[in-house]
Length: 264
Image 1 (tube, rainbow, N blue to C red):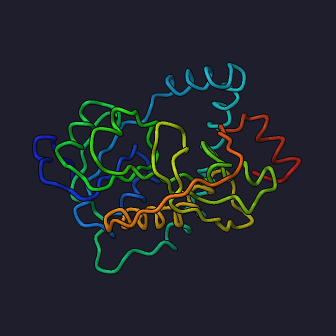
Image 2 (cartoon, rainbow, N blue to C red):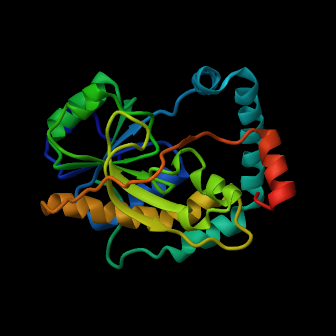
């Protein structure tokens, strides 16, 4: 149920910041099963042009174009993986007696917009869960006195950023193909860790299914962290390990790693 900002003034203990997408909907449903009155603040995804400009700035023109080409291929692979994705989602059973529907959905444009900050100020949540949004600004993080808790589909700090499970498999570091739940700061998956867990994948899983397999574990740990925050027992730690930010593979990296290492 969508809500206007003007009717959002009833306090909600838990807010979820998300972008649109099937994985975000899954996260919202699972958290709504656990927490009454969940309020979703939903942003619009970045445009393709914004993403390409940022990739060019961070990675260079040629790698950025290779990543765009790979993204188109991954979309096609995803269509061929629908059976596996449906199997993973069906195995993630619902909580008996819980609807999995949030109390309110408020569209805010961007998590860094004035509208989003105003909504947070009105709702006054005790904890804010985060999944799949753009980098959250310091201004938004400081808009309310509540912890922001993010789920990353990789083991921090070794595998921050995008497609981390894929890169762990490419390197042969299967023990660090997993998930992390952490406090949010202004960096990319750099905040103090709350929970980490490896994830077991099936032999036929690919870059199109890794995140779905990870979500079943990740959203449970995200819910555990939210519950910890509500009960005043949130504990974090800083792992002593190498830190690296990963980007999507280019189409030629993907082809090489598949042909040579068998990682698709």
